[in-house]
Image (cartoon, rainbow, N blue to C red):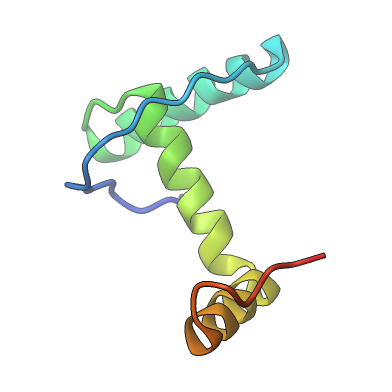
Length: 80
């Protein structure tokens, strides 16, 4: 399984978004896969957040941009 165990204690800010029905179906299937693999209950929201986190961490160009933004301060690092 590509996604490791989810543990996160950050505060939560609500975000409302729409998804295609086919994507929701896959998300539900992945949720069952996760629960079967780890034996842990997981909400769809935590699952989506964890998947996005893994995606961002694996995007080398994005990580490079984040490092550049840290080096140049809050005003730098915007992508055009």
